[in-house]
Image (cartoon, rainbow, N blue to C red):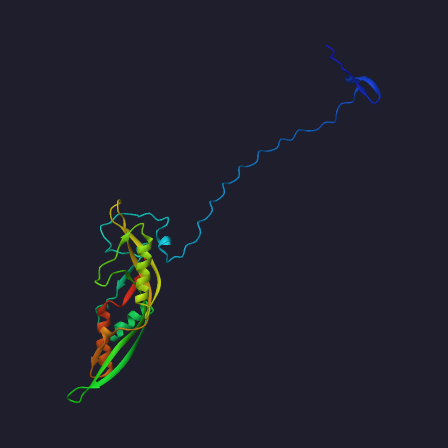
Length: 234
């Protein structure tokens, strides 16, 4: 059956549609769908100084509840230990030198002498210590300080107060927090890390009939004092 023809007007007059040349062929090209764009990464939080309480607590909820602040870790299982010289025939002076090498510490000496009533010379030696130490923040009675979890002001004031009182020989490096207690009332204790700089340890002074004997006495006292610490990574 013949198709229906339509009369249209062109520049050459009236013509039927069947008399017109066919339109040019344009192949159909399918356009693939655009791949979904990857979600944009969330904007990072502004950096916070590592020694601030906000940096220590923000974004880090208490990992577990413990009964008290006695077991303080630096993080990841790392710990500060008091150095104990291994049982050997090593003398106290050599044992102290061994600790200094392990801890990258420096030990100097202030030597003085005096005469006793029987006119013999008595030598006295005071160790001068430079090293890095870390321990929990305590009050003057030796009690571990702890603060409410959400009270940044008390934490900052306690650290500032410690830094001011020890400014002559101590340089604060940083501090970390330890959260403990029941979930209803979390408490925060602090582990401070600082550098001891040319600090005379007067309570570890040694005496002897010679400088060498006085140094050995002072070294033994220093090793027993708890001033010599070693950091063990976790």
